[in-house]
Length: 305
Length: 307
Image 1: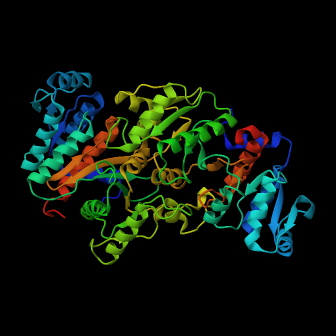
Image 2 (image 1 turned 180 degrees about the vertical axis):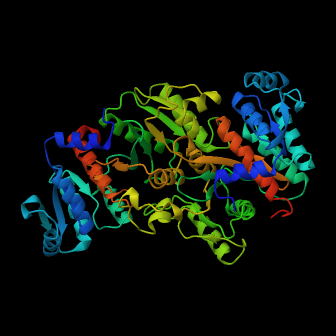
Image 3 (image 1 turned 90 degrees about the horizontal axis):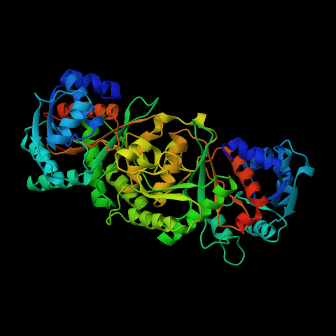
């Protein structure tokens, strides 16, 4: 089992193959990230943009020209589509977000013809390293879907389960979060949670244990749950937290980082090859972890296909 | 100004005891907290609930309740109604939920507010003490309104401001939270945030400031700011009041005290005094702290009137 960010890095290095990471229009900060990931033995960067500008940027870093490849694309409006095409044509293994704004980046990645999506939707999983023991927890969806329907939540869960499998989490324990632990028809999130719970009982998600609805105190603390009459293997030992919608997911993901001071790295799911987003609330060292995770995902091709 | 939970207990010791109606103290943790609150002279309790259960748990925590005022009632809604009516009649200074689902309490409070003709929207304020932050911060509404519209959020803001003003925060900073991010358009929660900010800027809420940031990323890094490492996080940027977009978000965030080194105290500011809303899963220390918070609020609201 992979229990820490260090493990992700170590496991990624162990694969022994550098993956080709395509990036369009990188700026200095992106190059520093690619530099760190290259030094760590994870990737060979493939830079797409104006050749002269890329070369000037490279000279500011510690890397030799032989460490990377560049694809000369003088038109900034074409750089991202060329980077995506490289990944689509298997000339690169991973797509890393460079200097394209988030909405345009997502739009191009999710384009039905030229993009990289291989699922009906994309979801984002936030991984946190617990402070007190060697365990990674997954929180999802924390970036992509504003108001996921029940069928969307099924896919979001399945995406998270693929990541859990990659991290070798045996028999994942899933908490479907809501405001209360009781099923209340006037709180829609509790209904979705109850249905997912029944589906899991019928083994529609395979070998997992899922509880829902759970409020966060029941999810986090077995004693707290017991006092509310919830008795389950999931309480106090959750691997995957499924959030009700984006207000909750996004704010929860950020609160854990900024107030909880927890380390977070994320993964975009639902694409045929790994895609690494450039989210402002992921610290620079943890972006290297995201690349390491993308390398692992790329190695287990089946995970993404 | 009440800055820490330590301030709260000192103040409660000084200004207690206050009369507290406890609704269904039928669990050891609750009864123990009531016992300790009584011993600390924070409160004179009135216990309302199932006589057998109260007797049993009192014995469990070695609390001799023979000299304590008790009202016997087993029906959950009746317990909630009784305690709430006592608060509104002025028979007690404050009330607290015990081992009873919160929906019964909200129903009873809403009924009494309606009867009193106050038109008050009921909302829950969950105060947090955060390490290294030398003042309290609050999430609201964390308990009542499932999907508050703008009108409800206006009332939620006013309720929280009333509390912060009496706690001595002259010009509270407020963030209206939203899941708005770089992608996904403009969610309703963000539209509400913008509308509330315009109202605050126009002076509609009195002394306060609604800041432009709607997420923790923006609060701590500024718009478009990038997190370099966790040492760069300046906790003093956390606003005093965090208005949550909906019930799911509020409840999930405010109860992270089960995971993070923060402490939570939840209450409803009714027009007749504080109604304490500990979670049914809270433990004794937290409930006792909640009782102390109630004493502080019951004392400070005296003579201030209502919002």
